[in-house]
Image (cartoon, rainbow, N blue to C red; front, top):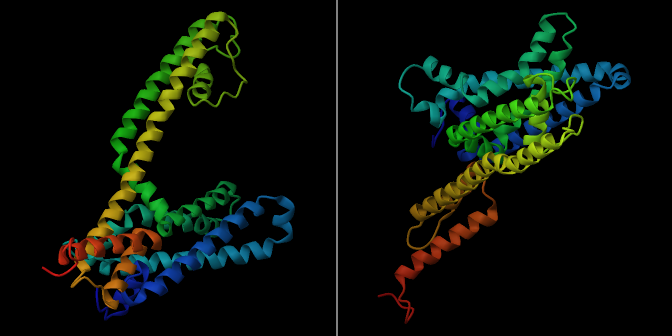
Length: 317
């Protein structure tokens, strides 16, 4: 959206942080991030009875102001989403586009951030669990943090592999629970009296936590526990390796995308102010550092110049 005309189009550009609204969008993100962090800190301290009682009015004012701001932001995003690049390409009415946005992960996170407080205001009950659910507001940082977005995308890309890894871990968990139950249930019926009870030991062992509150005491049980411990080292590494590999691949793709964009923008071995502004906007959206961006620009300029000038004499062919 190069030249936004309507207020809704300008609002969409502000939320996306594109064009002339790049700086304003960045400042808006910083302000919302600050508000989220203040809310999280306030909710944590509000759990202290003496503090909650002493600063009850201040906590209430902060909650009302925060929920109002988050609600306005949510409604504004829902209204302006039809002009965003991602949803403008969807064929159909604006209602269909808003429905797609409504069920998107980031929109659902925004809704969860305000829903507990709205329920508390609508229903005059002692809904303490809703107060705790307000901590889910921290997940709104996913929208403003490029690293969190990379991590979320890594989970989505490796979803099937992660499910397969957790399925294998679930099978091993059941086998370990059954094994330790057969070995130890006669000796320690209070701790290994059933397979579900033995799952606590199996979970603590497979995750290499080892709380030590439930341990085998027979020789065979200790041997079996050692085997499960050694096996768990490889089991825990599988999802960790998948996630780390996918995260690294996401970073590589973004860097490659930026390098391709730089290559397309270069004309006559130079970059004008408009092209540099476009690349700076793209750098921010991709979550790359200025050092990475400058390195990519210098690399592409060097490659372009090497094709223009002769390597041997340094003159144009």
